[in-house]
Image 1 (cartoon, rainbow, N blue to C red):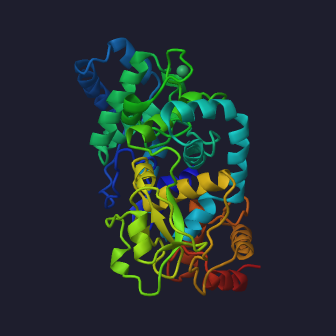
Image 2: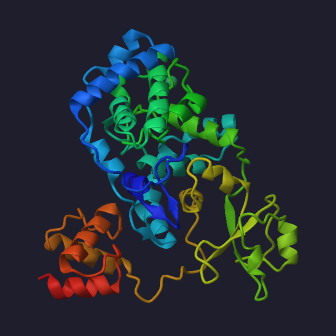
Image 3: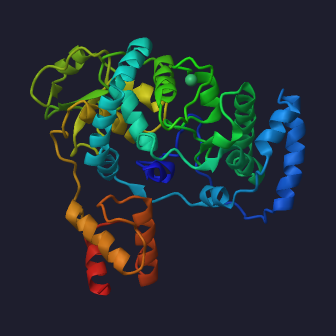
Length: 412
Ligand code: CA
């Protein structure tokens, strides 16, 4: 899931994870040879900058011990944007039965702690759980790259120099403060750390020492308390409205003016009622504050009125699809079900069994997609692209009926 959120582009939004600071997709650069010796020289130069910014030589040496130019980080940074995915495919994965089941188990396991966090920060536990589930699959995928090495590589390589440098300086300050040892400071290639994937500047501004041991340990595999409190604090600081939903599914009247279906148009539930908007059950939209009509898949798909908390979630990761996934996953963890209206999946769309068949055929053809689970993630999309490329057919990266037919014809 992590890799999915790292690279997937959904509905035009790049989901580089987490987008506390925006990393916009850029055109492929001219590849300049990057060498270990050049990197060593860069570290020397950067050291002067770090010392001028209040980092002690001791901290610097500790943090940079054994740090090398990280080829994996460079490869991931240079990877081209993934094919766009439809909102329903993304939500299928983001709110899969497995993620919901694990979320419910985590709700049980950490019940006491979550209740305390909810009270203290006035942020609903289900939203915090959902972010945890999306960012690291509840701590099972926090990233295994040395953060100093990742950020130094990004800062040296040049494409994200400014981002890499400022995050790296902040990461050094975190080490100097004693929150974490350099060795345990692990995360994603893009610098996101811990259970809920904070980049260093977000960590510095919002991380919490919930258990009061003097360290803001968002990495502890046994105790996610600090990390979950940090996430709750982040949402609180951006205006979370306690006990209010992210949105509700609605139905629109026949004569609805679709010009009003915009996140920029905000009105009270009473006003939407006057305009004929109703809950899917037919009832009146409760007063959750001002909201916007949101049609993630256009007029033929489910319709929603989204409220303040939808926009607060977007401060964590600035994509509508991400905000929906967090909201919907949280609702499912709390016992909610699927949306009432079907997504317009279209005639070429594959059902779950067909998606599994696609993965089995790709595996058989030598394109490794891992365990066939019906989730069309980056690994499967890469395999589809490679297969399409080898077959000389147009590259779509899409698991659809055309692809399944071609696979069945070509793969024995
Ligand atoms: Ca702590």
